[in-house]
Length: 255
Image (cartoon, rainbow, N blue to C red; front, side, top):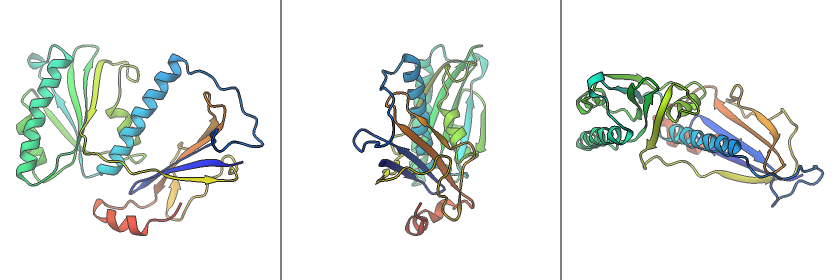
């Protein structure tokens, strides 16, 4: 039975998606009846797509030596609405862009403005780190404290992507949240190939130097299409640093 295999390649991860489609058919497979998505399924799908796109952007544009920063508000400087918080962000971002430009660097960022159920506001940001980034951030944020840390990369940034895109639906401690990212965060084009025979369930081919990320293998039948699917993530056993990206692109393993 033929199926589509789509791979998203990053420096230290490869995401693999395998699925049957009506275009390629699934001979020998009994297809379930196609169903209309419920509101709950649509909400789940939208969350999945948002987290996945954020993960792709992080994996392709940031690394472990970049910053994950929390911008806090002092109690007497808290905004009264999300629109006011966005204005604070715009003023902050304007300074960042100016300072990065002075140093001949391009600013890349992702952020989530959050307000908790008790009224505390803060902004989580991911930003590419250059010399003096900590000084620039401190100069630009005028509403409270700043906490910087290097990106945590467990799962090759999967948990970080989920965190930076969280909403009141995914975190009940939040009353409201607003996620956004800069436009200069490209993602790679997917590699697509049609195969004639479906691989054995629970078994995937792992190239040398890679391993299947724990708990990343998912197999089942799509509730909407009625066809089988499988997805998993391959992680390098030894991470490649950012400066070896071009070299890795030329010599990467075929998976």
